[in-house]
Length: 359
Image 1: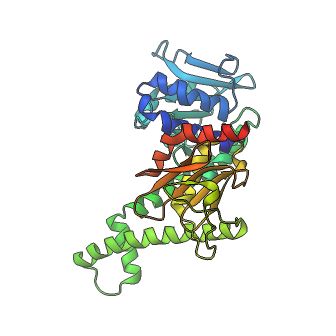
Image 2: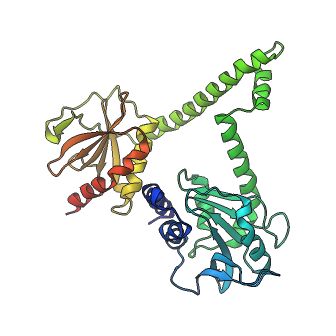
């Protein structure tokens, strides 16, 4: 599979198994070793490529270990330090990486809890690991711009010079994006004051500042939604589908009438739900075979762009969200969900549906 598909599969696995990953070893086995093997492409069972519990004498620290060392071209290129899933990642956790970075040939260090991967190099001083990562990969929200850079660290396309050359730009762009994201979510007083001064001509009192703190947050949310909707409209225009058939609580697939096409509106939540279903099924079939067709009263997810192969229907055009699943007779039963992540609870049913169609 493509690296993006592998990341989607690993993301689905992380969400499904999160509550069971209570130790560092469990996190390594379930998430980090698959990341090394399936995403980066190294053989975790070949000690010439991946050495677990890598040991070297570092100054007065004798026998200290780093969790994984990855070889490429006969030399250590990447060091990985692991923490348990959901454990907060702090630079204090990287003490072994700091020491090993100085005494090996490695130019890349990774600090991870299985879901978040922080990539470090030595931009600030030669052979001394930086205190801030140049790249952050979050499996829960994969930044598409990070995927090509990650590709440069894979076994098949390893290009250390290229990633080091772009590391400084990646570092500051990443930091700026995270800063902008935090300012959009929770505007600081300085940010509110700055924006207010651009649109409000009278003196900015504390009362005005409190008023604009709310306005800035609302404007930020609306701005982001509008930008996303603009992109969705473009995608829908270029990839329009024939609308699928509406359903009731439990309804045979063949008995549903056609909806009116002119009032269909695809929402962000529907597309997010669609991508979660794709992530669940990416190990069963190629994700290009899992497509969607939107209708007035529901959002259909089908296999092979074929209405006779329904996988699920997302009923999000109401106060209470529901996901509709189909039995072997293609009869739909709806299940209430409170959040999109609850779709993962129905992963086995979705996979079984694909297996039925695949014979």
